[in-house]
Image (tube, rainbow, N blue to C red; front, side, top):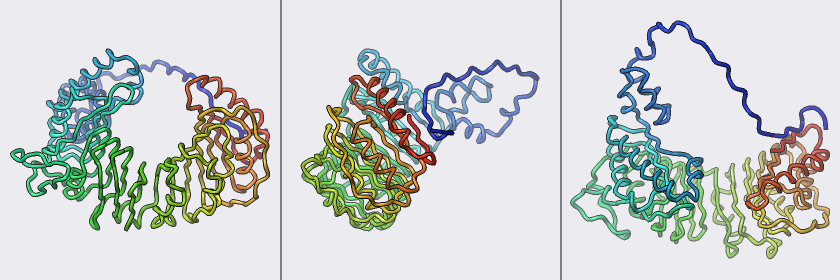
Length: 465
């Protein structure tokens, strides 16, 4: 190995900045002399906590944060992870979170909102508060609304989206089988551009309502909703560009006909029907049901497979050992530029069969393999010769879950030997199982440094994470 071809990432401690002295303390506060709308725009680029702290800078700033058009109450995954297993701490933090959101929404003065985001694990004790927050956001003609209230580690939620928010308060909330009266609404939803429900029980009728009454809606995301049964995302005038229907286990059928749709993510193939999606170029799909063949999956995508530019396939639960020929004869994907495959190994699979996806994608530029070990192989297999088919466009290959066994080397050898313009190979020894995680990852990292690196040509950059 020579030059800078191999990069091994390690954690470095950042150097502490030296103390800086400032002169001219008597200089006028020129920022506070700016117009209010500019100051509010500055504050809107900060987090809510940062905007609140900035109010102490000057008396003029005291109430400006109340006019910011973006209210993001996302505490972040790091905070949620710290609450793992700490039930009493979690309860206290949940109460503090509800109090915080209530306080901000009561004090807020802006007549319109660009963004309103809730992200915390909330249960039935917060139902009334959540509904008030939704009322607040909709009354402000919110443009982007995200409600994410699930954390599997602590609680599940049965919060149901209140359909009564969508109709006159004197009417009874519609049942799942009753259409909503679109002519009698409490608020105007025409400003809504992005809508995301995660772990919210939302009905087919409610989704239909938003599609009908939100002419600017471009992004629709629904995760973990058991109320969805037979969903139709159809309309020649829909502006929808991004659609995610994920882990909605009660869903029996999904029909999509949206001429502006560019990105689709689904985790169920049952009853999937795609029509009139001429702009669809980015698809992510789970194909974990062994009763549905890979060829059937591509038949469901037949109307767009020739135009796809990005494809993500989650194959973590498929048993390719029983279906050795399943990946043969894949349809051509002439425009595919990026391919992501998520696969779970059980210790005996031959990864070389995944090369069928590369051969079916002649213009592929980036290939990411996320290899999740179910159990580590007890012994190596004998490497067999494979067909040599050159690929002339693949430049980046990333291997997540590298362990250093025969399976790994066999597939990496195929990539190195057949992808003639490869520029970069990224090795990530991430091990998904917690037992002996650090030891396994360190062993894999050393294997990559000692065994793989000498096999990689000098012109290819090898990055070991």
